[in-house]
Image 1 (cartoon, rainbow, N blue to C red):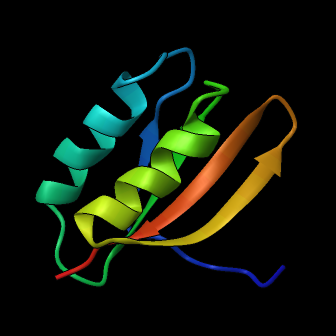
Image 2 (cartoon, helix red, strand yellow; image 1 turned 90 degrees about the vertical axis):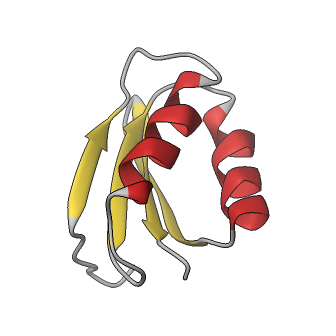
Image 3 (cartoon, one colour; image 1 turned 60 degrees about the vertical axis):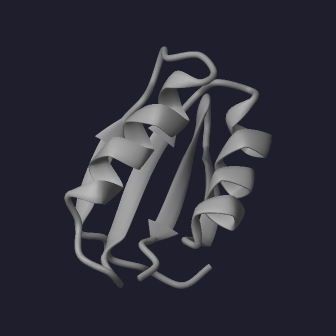
Length: 79
């Protein structure tokens, strides 16, 4: 996997559905189009919820990276 930088991080560890997506939505609102948000989440539902959120909201899920007990999701904000 290639190295990718990001502009902001959201620690959603310990949060359950729908909180990781709700917090991501709020954080992305304050970011500019094209910037990348890294979300750290350990909610098993996030594997489904985050890609669905990106698809519905017009953002791009750049990567889903397993990091042991949690996942990192890199989301590029849409316009």
